[in-house]
Image 1 (cartoon, one colour):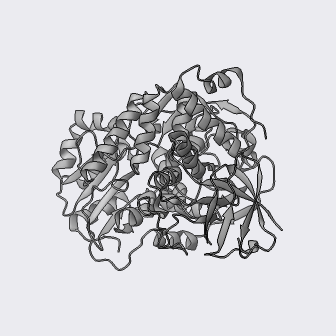
Image 2 (cartoon, rainbow over the protein chains, first blue to last red):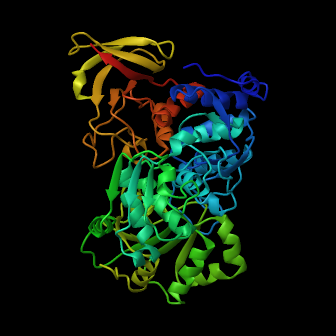
Image 3 (cartoon, chains in turn cyan, red):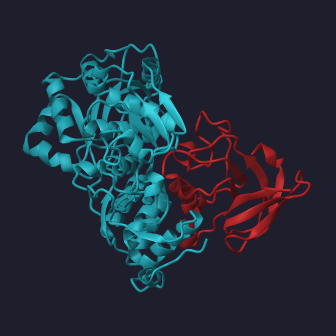
Length: 415
Length: 148
């Protein structure tokens, strides 16, 4: 398919906005050709996942964009980096890696990205409008943006997100097209007990199950009695995007594109109706853990995606001034840190032994002690999925309350 | 890719390619009539052994960017380095940082010699596109056209 370009797009390619913008436009156009997109679409904002250090090549790329004079042309927030620039937490990166990680973060700021450093940009004031086209990266941010806000983005990988941010254009394909946003299967949770929906840990477990069943398909969840709140949807989406390739889900009566099941199926018969039983749910709950029969835990980590202020307030209430026996990491962003400091919450959390982690998280950079056979407890479906591979810790799962009680005693209360 | 008469460790040859959309023929010891490829991203000629992955892989977390070894313990080809191979991928899954891992492999000169996929994965292949912009020599990327 031949890619059709408008006058402004051709001018960008020709270097009329500089060599950096031309390089970004070549990446957008080449990607569009790989994706068989017929044209490009203008995007209103971007969320950039490319500033996390994976090796020197990423730093060199960002610095080349900077040298060539590239600037973002739309609002662009940054996902986490490998360093906590606020100094709230420290990590064990060796000197060369630390230096390159810092250069990477600086280069992205220099080309005009906002130093938001959070995987919850949608709770930090970056909320694109329903139906608008945007270019977002990072799997949980993408799924929240599409599903809960109803803005339209594909899963933009590293480097394409910043290329879209510089040019203001993205390949017009996939989830930018309304016809590709309809559900093709029904995930029916009507038979799960009503009271379970009010429990915080219900949502990451359900999300993990949904992600496994969905793969990359778009489904509609049927039978959710009421809006569970944004933090619950955040946990559901992040878990689903970790166990599957979910970029968009719908919940009938809750998310904005799905007033009811029939509408979001586009009047078509679903390819599959999955009836989720209490046994399916119980099985998934067991599978959240990678270690069994544990009598001690070595650390607790919460905040993937980054904690909201409300979640931090609840954390403080649950701890209730008791001191914790084991390291406890609470990951959040600068947008919450401001309030944590002005209300004295940071002090009171740290006084109980909690480490507040800003700008990054414990699964993407080495903050936790290196420990063969270590066991981590979490309330996050995403941490449960990635912590074993990235940190070497085995994982047990529980609600925030269970995480706190376990940290007080050093033993998993729900084992 | 069981239908393509390809097994691990076969010596294959891919000619240098010049333009996306061109059709190339792979020569190899067990390919009686050859295998046709459509060029996704042109690349240099490759003379290398095939490595056929039998399960989809997430490059981020699944391939060690420092060594090119398949690091995912649940993957059937766990422990095998992909450097210098003609890599046949049944699919990619997981994180959108796959491109970053592939770019790092290219930068360290431990990337595959060529990448053959069933369907183009724009996230992974962005690593090759960025390498080209950086002036680093990366592998060609191809899509299976058909088998004779």
